[in-house]
Amino acid sequence: MNDLEMCRLATRAVHAGTRTPRPDFTPAVVPIHPSVTYLYDQMENLDGVFAGTHPGYVYSRYGNPTVTALEEAAAILEGGEAALAFASGMAAVHAALLAVGARAGSTVVAAQDVYGATYALLDKLLRSQGVETRFVDVTDLQAVEAACAELQPAALLVETISNPLLKVADLAALAQAAHHHGAAFLVDNTFATPCLVQPLALGADVVIHSATKYLGGHGDALGGVVVTSAALHKELFEVLKVTGGNLGPQEAWLVLRGVKTLPLRMRQHCKNALAVAWWLEEHPQVRRVYYPGLASHPQHALAGRLFQGQDYGGVVSFDLAEAGQERVFRLFESLRLCLPATTLGDVCTLALYPAHASHRALSAEERARIGIGDGLVRLSVGIEVVEDIIGDLAQALDACL
Ligand SMILES: Cc1ncc(COP(=O)(O)O)c(C=O)c1O
Image 1 (cartoon, helix red, strand yellow):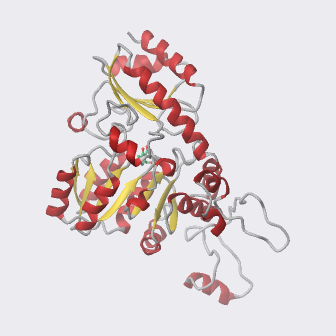
Image 2 (cartoon, rainbow, N blue to C red):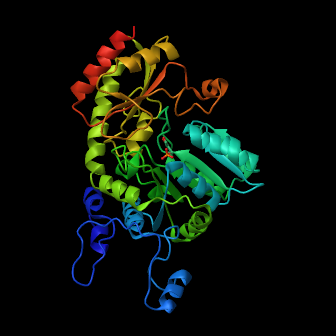
Image 3 (cartoon, rainbow, N blue to C red):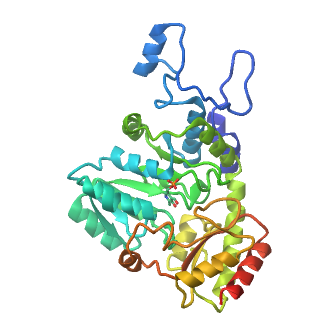
């Protein structure tokens, strides 16, 4: 493990995750362990595992060897002390908020354009349980500072690259603002992945992923991961033990297999996304393109510094000129290669209409306030040959006129 920590990210991605030696051989790939429970010759050892003084497993809600392998990989890639895997990205977001103290009477400050279900979790479910959330534009540091000073929140929650408007958060500055007011700083790094930035190194306390997206990368496993310090991991584990949003071993294995090619895939996603963004910017039917790699993006300079000037992510959003649901639906029905599907981060190019999918839980007024218009389209650019992606978008844009 120590040797691996010395290696570059793409090498770590290939090898990270437990390769547990057996007495006579070591599987090169971690096995899928479906067993719910575990047997020990000595009851004392079982008792020790319960107490945490003896290594091992007792029951899958408390831990599973295949899931542990993914957790180790996630911790290594994000540079954290420990990680826990969850049944979905939303289970991970929920547990992370509870672990840092989102309880009745506490407050949270969150980015106003977080993923729709995260917004609904904070604005509806947690609010109904006595947790007040103030949504702010996190690109306005003064507004964040003012909200934290006023509320002294338990947590500041942001997405490194927001969904779907692709705003970029100044992680180091936000970490300072959070800590200055005693808040834990939670970063959803789903869109950026550790390939672009590792938020813990910039002061984040908790990094969250929907592993369903780039970590898994193939659209065949739902999952979530939280990477954090050893101390916060304990709190998180207490939440997981009683809420039970555990990731299953089959899914953990699929995500871990995806992780091995994450840096390779991300490089291609980002290269293709930049080419698609440039092309869309010139298209007469496109009113505005949102992509941090474009010079026209309001946080382009920040993104360059944060992601070290190389890649800017695989998601591109754009406003179709003078369009509403009917025309966007026509566009989606005209696609022949890109898939109109409700996810992102897969190897294939995916198109999503935020107003009816990811941000459906928000009212039209809430969407308008955040800036999610009725003509907004989100593309998760895949790793296909980029000319094929652009060719498909070109014919679909013509067809939906
Ligand atoms: C940024 C972000 N965070 C969290 C989630 C929730 O993940 P999941 O669908 O795995 O629950 C999503 C889903 O799209 C997302 O885009």
